[in-house]
Image (cartoon, rainbow, N blue to C red; front, side):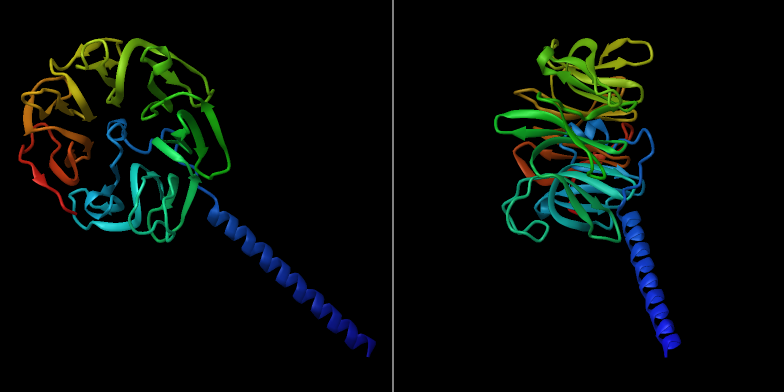
Length: 341
């Protein structure tokens, strides 16, 4: 009898050990699945040109992620040619960033429908898995402005009452910090560092080192909306009536590109789009990156110029419920059409 009891006790112990091992294994697997993979060094979530134009479009490989004005500015994806548009989430979004399996974005204010299945507005910086899962997480629930992903860190503007601050949060949501209490547009990223107009130093171009956390004046030039592309920093000159200039990082030379005053602009590769500020004849213009080959695209006042490889998208300044597009290439077709996903 004692021997049978010992066998039963041993069996119970073995069963308990097996259950414990299974639970430990499942816990480890769950943690692995929930852990965030590291992005390759040099990762930037979107072009500075798009982010300076509210980051409504983000091209990543074979997909474009965008905010759809025909459906409450909800988050969508599509092919580069605009086909197969698909709703990803009923979330009004802007400053869209993409890397690996995830999207990072600023959730816009909304008074329609429900958001994340909950009623009411939920401002903030969010992370969402692109496919195969509805996984999402709020990295910071707050009123947020510009957002950019650099490697494994999201940098963004944070509005607190009447003050705007510069913050960061890691993509795994484990670390966050207030960098400084000042207005910083972090859209322009070069070699892992952020370049921005320092409004505390008369709009001079400043550099924030993401490794050391230190800032310094990079260029003694007053700039607006610095935008990096192909070894140049493009900017609207505060001292020269917001004409477009570019600064060469290779030889430190400066070149004026337009005689026009600009409202906004974007650069991708060898092509520039800009909105000409003119009371009598405002228009959207396309040109080569060196300032040559200027071509009128559309008469009127336009904004939110977002560029992708195939098409450049933009909106009427007074009617952002509609979306237009034109071929991006400076040598391409100039015909404009309304784009309804």
